[in-house]
Length: 68
Image (cartoon, rainbow, N blue to C red; front, side):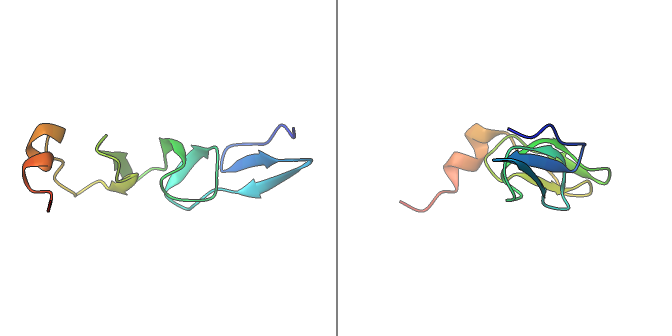
């Protein structure tokens, strides 16, 4: 697997760009971030990296609002 700089992930023998929201990643989706880019944060509720101004709610509260 390729060794890639921040902002890219190894895909076979080449580096592929991460989503703009990811500083480091393992895939090209915004849900595939290890670390978020500047201006983004991870709310830890399966939503990937979100804009810093987003209000994160605890997972147990988020589960209350899920539609069955």
